[in-house]
Amino acid sequence: MHTHSGDLTARVRSGHQIITVRWPDGTTEVHTLRPGDVYRIEAGVRHEEQFPDASVIELRGVGPLRTERP
Image 1 (tube, rainbow, N blue to C red):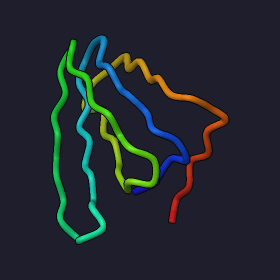
Image 2 (image 1 turned 180 degrees about the vertical axis):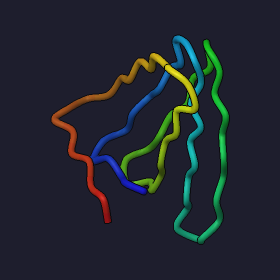
Image 3 (image 1 turned 120 degrees about the horizontal axis):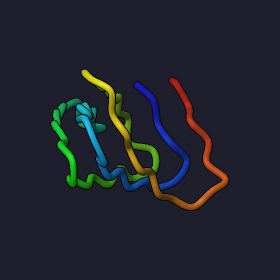
């Protein structure tokens, strides 16, 4: 699990991505993204990504960006 210092928007270009989000209240959400899917990750939200096969992911955000692994 890690966090980012800024908001990020992820768009899957090919392959697929699994994002697991852990909210401050302890709940967990799992999102499976396929080509064309878009997901926004807000700054400070704990999450992890998995890439079960070769994937191309486009990330957009405003930097500088720090990644923190608590």
